Every structure is written in C-alpha cells, then in structure tokens.
Amino acid sequence: MSGRWTGRVGATLALAYVAVPLALVVWIGTGTARSISLPAGVPGVEPVRRLLADPGWFDALVRSLVLAGYVAVVAVVVGSLGAYASLRRGPVVRAVVLGVLLAPAVVPTVVYALGLVLVSTEVPVDPAYLLVVGHAVLATPLALLVMRVGVASLRPEQVESARLLGASRTLTLATVVVPHLLPFGLVAAALAASVSLAEPVLAIFLLNDSTATLPQKSFQGLRFSFDPLIFTAATVIILMVGAVVATGAALLLIRSRTAGGPRNGDRTT
Image (cartoon, rainbow, N blue to C red; front, top):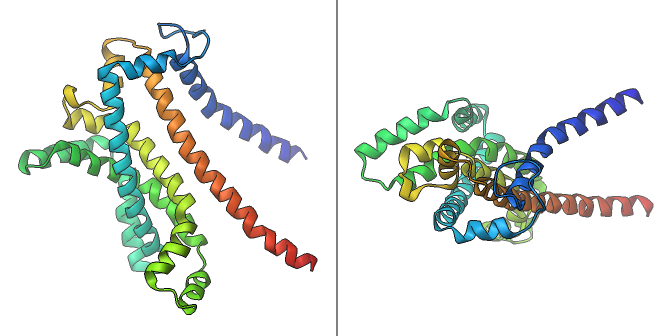
C-alpha cells in the first residue's frame, strides 16, 4: 500500500512540475494585465485578439504553423519508414537506421545550424526549405520512437488476413495499416510540430527579421522588451498542440476499449 501511494505522489509531483509552468503561461497570456506579472488578471480572449491584430505577431504565427505542418509531415513519414525498417528488417539494418535517425538527439542544435548555413552559402536554396529540413531532422527521433510503438503493435496477421481476402497492397495499406497507425501518427505529428514551434536557433541562423518565425520573434522580444503577447502566442501554441495530442490519446483509448470488448464477450459465452 505504501509503495502504491509513493508512486501516486511521485506521479502527481511530476505532473505538477510540467503542468504548473504551462498553466502560468496560459494565465499570463490570456490575462487582462498589460505587463508580465502575477496576478495576471482575469483570463479572456482580448489578448488573443490583440495578437491576431498585430501584423508582426500574426505573420510570425502563421509562418510558424505552416513550417510546423511541413515538419510534422516529413518527420512522421521518415519516422514511420524508420520504425518499419528497424522492426521488420535484420539486426544490421536496425542498427544503421536507429543510429542515423536517433543521432540528432545527441548532437547540439548549433552544429546543424552551422551546417545549414554552409549549405545555404554553397547551394541556391530558399532558407525556409533548409529550415524545414533542419527542424525535421531534430523532430525525427521523437517521431521514430512513437511510430515504433505503433508499428510494433500492428500484428502481421491483420495484414495477411486482408491480403488473403483479396485486398491489394494499396487497399490493405489504406484500410488496415493507416487506420491502425493514425493515433500514433497524430501524437508523433504533435511532438514534431512542438519541436518546430519551440526551436529558435535554426531560424536565427537562417532567417532575417522580416521572415522571423514565432520562436525567433519571441526570443528577440525577450531580449529587447517584455511583451505580454509572447505569452499569448505561447498559449495559442500550447492549446493547439494539446488538442492534437488529446485527439491521438482519445483515439488510442477508444481503440483499446474496442479491442478489449469482444474478448470479454467471448469469455462470457
């Protein structure tokens, strides 16, 4: 009993450690106070309206959301392919795939930033595309870990049954594999997008002030002024990422309950 209570207390403290700072950011970002201070006043939508009415912040927000969308797609696709290769192939392929795709997690971000700057000076490529590549590289390790769980939970019998019933590879992929991996893909996409939305270093190296992303503009705002709209922008991002993660978690919960239902019914019969 004491061990169970210890685990619950530890889990509660860990949750509070993560949730309390986020709650304070949301409070300041939606509060009526015009300065960064506590108490921040009554939460409302007026700060969000001011954020959307400011051309600089609005453009940075839209630019970051578009960038995060591209990064999420690339990271989920690469992570899914890497997850399949690392689980369905031999040990040599597994070691190579995991080593290459997980390496960005241990290499400093500034190293990639310098490398992309060198590429931009030698190759005539739009820096925005290089930023997508850089953020996707940083986000792929998280997407890979999530998609490995999804691919590992996909039973080969399900795919084989669909093929035996006459389904083509495309139909099997669309009706069996994709629906099974969809919740995991949503969670992986949310994590990849959050990496892009919270990473200012690559943008600072590659973009200028006129094309700044939201993290870049927030970093500059913290350096030169304390604008409450920084917290409002962070609040919008927190709510968006949280909605995607919650959707993926809800789909996983519904699937687990649906999968468990027939088994319980079989036992009663």
